[in-house]
Length: 191
Image 1 (tube, rainbow, N blue to C red):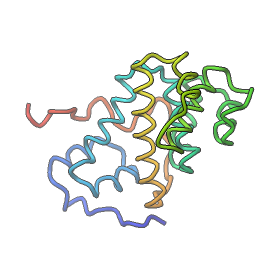
Image 2 (cartoon, helix red, strand yellow; image 1 turned 90 degrees about the horizontal axis):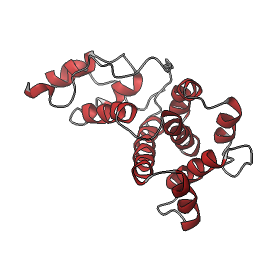
Image 3 (cartoon, one colour; image 1 turned 60 degrees about the horizontal axis):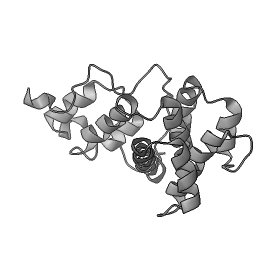
Image 4 (cartoon, helix red, strand yellow; image 1 turned 120 degrees about the horizontal axis):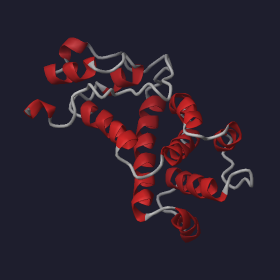
């Protein structure tokens, strides 16, 4: 059972209510709307991570599944399993990530580098030269920073879920984004 009740929509500012009307009635979105001043940019950042990264979708999903595993977040893992599968991550790789086996020879060198880097980011404030160097062999400077941004975002997302006991009520598939293209984007209020 969630630790906080859903906020009363009537207490939210009109612009937040309008923005939320474009989203499915997701339990995490409801929980995030307690922070009415940041719910919109937080969700828009998620959208940017699906539309504006140089990091390939498959790599993004490697990062997200790794964060979910090391942050013990069943919500994020459940939401991203179908997206990871659609992005081309096979069951064996998904299982190795869920089982926290970043050193497994069952992972390709690329996958191992991304998973090891992400696991270290979640577990420690600093990453060893060895792990960073391994990731640097495969990732551009932009992609490295994007890995860090995705990991940080989904760590935060995971902690909202785990600390507040957000329940999984619906799993969104690869073709079902949380934030549709119809939702007002940044600066829409100014138009």
